[in-house]
Image (cartoon, rainbow, N blue to C red; front, side, top):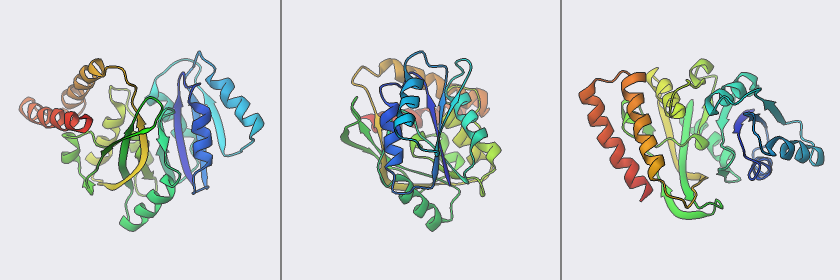
Length: 249
């Protein structure tokens, strides 16, 4: 079974489509863990109303008592997960119908414990723009340090091959990247499936402030989390910045 973990925060505009999208997957042995992070909009009501009209024992709503952030919410979902496989999905992103089916087959073919895939940038309505982010066949720890090519919504992990403790996300900026590095640092290799399985919703508004935040976060990870020496951090940062820019052009 695949445990799909979705942090929910002010996602009322997307969450019904998220549930419908997961229910439309061609692979049906899953559980969907929706972790509401003390939303002040109608996210919880949208979920509850949907389940009244569409009862589905595979969907569970978990609620944080106060706002704790995406890492905490994903970790809460991980604690409750019953499946062998762990998948992450953000409420505003989109999975293609065969996402799970394709990745499970790829994982079996490669005998992998950690896989991720290509994805397409979408507009504010999650309509594909034609801009696709391709991924390498494999990614080691050293290779991952200079490229944040692993998109959280495309990740699938086999807990029989990767210790579940390594999947818990630290409470740091860019916690998802920190988690992938944490897994890879412990000797695992991530396998990239260069087929699009998801659409990354990207609003039309300017991304300049987000870019600055991303730069600060990646530098923090290098120096404070991974303890990378200054000279190497500068080298890695330049490579990361170049790849991040090219990915968004």
